Length: 98
Image (cartoon, rainbow, N blue to C red; front, side, top):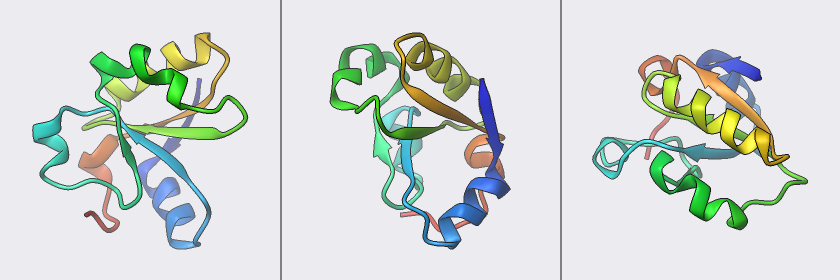
């Protein structure tokens, strides 16, 4: 599984790269702030909503600490999606939030 640290993702974000970020945390967690432009799909719903994603795109998966997003990356990867897990999750994210 491909992984990037929160610092690496933040650097790409600040450079203005087009990032497809999926936040797999629960709604209460996302209410405390998420990466601007990220899509919220809770881990429990990901299998049912993956048809909303495009296999040609690369997705960065985010959660609180990197564990759930790692599981999400394995799930999507097993269906042929191009995914990257953000290690450290939002606990290590120091960039902007909305």
